[in-house]
Length: 415
Image 1 (cartoon, helix red, strand yellow):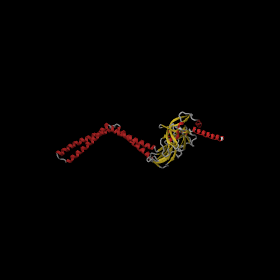
Image 2 (tube, rainbow, N blue to C red):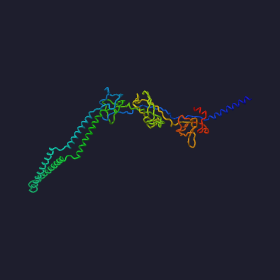
Image 3 (cartoon, rainbow, N blue to C red):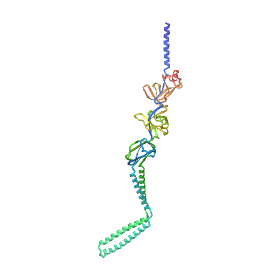
Image 4 (cartoon, rainbow, N blue to C red):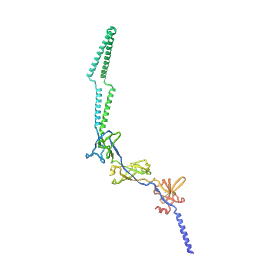
């Protein structure tokens, strides 16, 4: 009987002790899970900062390709230097325009020079002689007009028609004298300021036409706008090209100025800063990974993929064997201090419209204010106040006291 009693007492003691232990260990620790990793991988492509489609602004047929140092016609894949000839078009029409413009300029200059040149003595003498001759003719016609007036009107021995003929000859002589006198006065006075201005404007107009024609002739030879590689050729010898509508002839891409065009999830947009955020660029075409800085951030979210773009300039001395279009990846180390985290819903303590969590820090409980976001099935998102990896305490409110030491079993778990 005594044996049975002791057994029952033992069972009761074990049961009671287990209950006390369970009661004592009702507090538990939970790590805050970050929604965004502090280290993120971005993928993208290497792109050329400068890619252009080269053509001609003039209309003519292609007559020749440029050549490389070995004298070989340029082909796809060949490199060219800035200012190197890419191709030439037929020049015949443009040479003729230059010659016509040159002739027009020569004529305009001659007209201006003749206008402003002093009147020669021989011309003045000729003009004065013409005036004197016409003046004598007028006076002779005036005397004859008076005589016929007497014969017709007074003596009535001549028909009236004869008087009319003499009067017409007098009027013509007077007009000729007036015109000759004007020419003489003009020669003596010289050209007016308006006449000189008009002649000078014609010279300038002809000069501008010549310069335009010379520019067209120069542009019949098309040169590379920058150092690069010919990546496409769309036309061949004899093909007609024009500037309106623009006809593409070659595609030229730079290899010296490359960028990595990378995509990241939109959640990381606030953490990536142009000129500050550092990354490690990887590519099988590069001999070694490159430590670079984000050049610029494109603040535009792709609505289908939920990503945004960042551009990273790759210095020429660091691009190694990288070429445009190559696949690249980058590892960015982001500051996760302000990243949202997820904790159990039971970890959040609400009081007077504010929210808190009890954080285990240095063996002590610390009450900390947090900003609550969306609620999940069993967790809740904290938008601020808690960093990923920090531990929150979950348990009965009466056991959560700000500044209280952590229980031994929590300390062991925390270790």
